[in-house]
Amino acid sequence: MTAKPHNLNKVLELGEGQFIEFKESFDKGLAKEIAAFANASGGVIYLGINDDGLIKDTQG
Image (cartoon, one colour):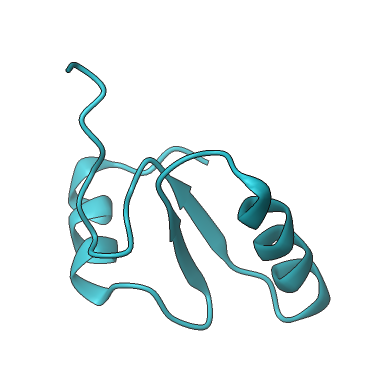
């Protein structure tokens, strides 16, 4: 799923919750989040966004 800019802004405003998780990068924690969502009601994991809702700078 590709987030459209206006939808992504709304997601960033809402922040993390039961169905939304931000992960700054691929790490060991990502597998745990995927398993947790798979065993619950599902959700969306956004990669490249830190816990404060800031998009990681990939240009620098």
